[in-house]
Amino acid sequence: MEIKPLSKQTLDDVVNLVNGVFPNQGFEPAWISLKGSLGMHPYDWLVHFVGRVPWLTYWVAKEEERVVGVVGHYAYKKDEHEASWIGWMCVHPDYRGRGIGRDLLYLVLEEAKRLGKPYLRLYTSTDPNEAVANIMYDKLGFVLFGEKKARPYTILFKQLKIN
Image (cartoon, rainbow, N blue to C red; front, side, top):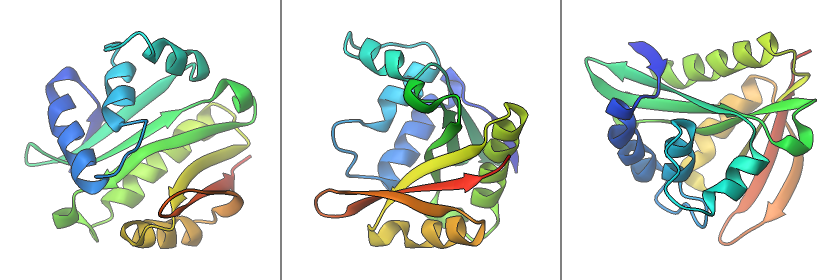
C-alpha cells in the first residue's frame, strides 16, 4: 500500500469511494472539499467554505493502483490556533481490517503534531456504518466533546489531546 497526496488523477476515484461509503452527505458533499483542496472551485458559494477553512489537504491510500482509502486534514478559522481536523476519512469495505484506516489516521496525527496543534478533532455520527471507525477512534484516545442532534443520527464531535 502507498499513501500519496490527492491529485486530479485520483480525484474521481476518491469521490466515488467517499460517495459509496457515505451515501447521505447532506448539504456538504465530499466532492466540494475534495475539489476545493486541489484549487478547483466549482461554485461561487464555495468561497464561503474556503473562507471558513484556511487550509485543506487530502491523502489517498492505493493498493495495486486502486484507490482504497482517503483522509483529509484541515483547520477551521474559528479554532485553528488550537486544533486541526480530520476530514472524510474512509476505507473501501473490501480493504478494511488491514490497518489502512489506522495508517491514514496516524499520518494526520503526525501532521497535526508537526503543526504544533494541541488537539486533533473529527466528527462522526451514531450511524451504524460508522461504528467500527468510532471503536478505532475511542481506542486511540479520542474523547467526546460535543453532540449535535441530526436526522436520523446524532453527530458526535471527538478530539484527541496531542500536545
